Amino acid sequence: FTSLSAVDPLALCADGSHAAYYWGEGAPHDGEQVWAVYLQGGFQCWDEQSCKKRCSNPGATWCGTRHWGIHFPFAEAGLFSPRNDSTLKDANKAFIRYCTSDAHMADATAFGMQFRGARVVRAVIK
Image (cartoon, rainbow, N blue to C red):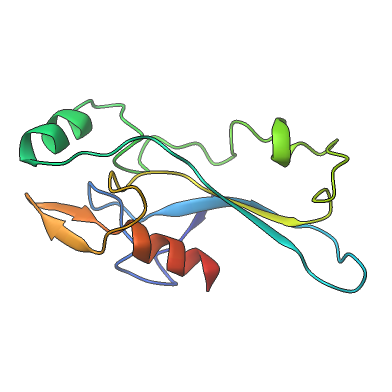
């Protein structure tokens, strides 16, 4: 769990908490660093009512990082598996959890909420 607060203080989740991502360090492959970046999906909201409904659940993870664990819960699966024998097995891997409710595309505020998905992705790439 790596917070983006030091990289970009406006890389925020919908509820205003600092966005974060999980990552695993790889090994150089033929002298080059390879990266695999995964953007988690999760639908989006489109108006004040749908956004408030989506984010009103006290344990909701789609709108903030407050209920995220320190370790990525799916670290043993697929691309992130340490047993992965694919071409990407030595790649640095970043998993950008979805907390912006904007399909990772916005950089704005509305309805008292933050929609900073594009900014979050840019901050991870930095």
